[in-house]
Amino acid sequence: MLKRETFRYDLSTSWFSKHLQLSEIPFKWHYHQEYELTLTLHSTGKRYIGNHASSYSSPDLVFIAPNQPHSWESPQSDVISEIFVIMIPETWFNRQLMSGMEEYRTISQLFSCALPAIHFSTECAKNSEALFRKITVCESPLERLSYLIMLFEILIKDKELEHISDRNLSLPIKNQRVDKILNYIDTHFSSPLTLQQVADFSHCSISAVKRDLATFVGLSFSQYIVKLRINRACFLLRTTSLPLSVIASQCGFQEVSYFHKKFNCIMRCTPAKFRKNPV
Image (cartoon, rainbow, N blue to C red; front, side):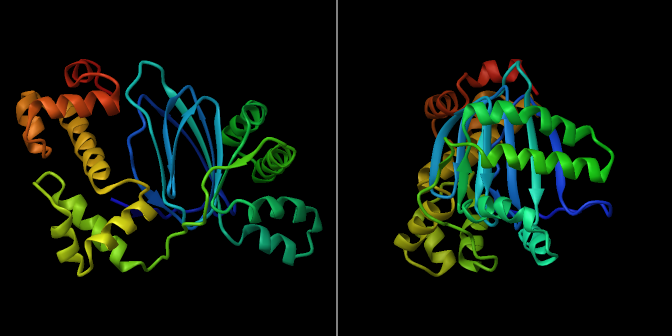
């Protein structure tokens, strides 16, 4: 399901940062109104932004414009992944420039080029790690801000950055049809579900459903269904002792062999092995 995320900011700062440590990164399709700068370490998997999907490996540094649907996804691992995230409101740099802070102009140019997203070089990602860590632990708002500016200076100097999506697929905040389609699929993915059913519920054509999924999820109908079912299977494997055949059935897989095939393809291990190594 495509979800809109919102954030609460501390009164002492105008932007937000967090540090996550995960043994796996589940597929969570979402968007928000902030710019997002994310450094991912000790992890390999797939990265989805707009209509673009690609593999990533550590260190992975990406800058995403507001309202871009996106998600990372990696299988469970014995190695703990580290994810550093910085969220900056869309109007942040405009406010600095309007206040007369011309020094921010070169940084604002980077923001204007972020549509829909930028992938930075491996060298740039390595050089930025220390600043991400300092931002995470620093308690002084002014010191954190100085580290952020230093971080953007590193990004600006990267001559090997690349745009990782071929067009702007920013999501209209009130795109009611897309929300309706994704909510319906999220509610019924464990049942036999057809494109026609989704189209009928959403009062649109099958081609419109396909187009919306390709545009805002970057996946076909069948690919998106399988991802939701595997995510649900992972949850049941971690939290229950149900037989694999029951889990397959509850997640919408009519054949256990197909469940095993898709699970192994996406999670890179069998369901039984995944169960032995819960998060």
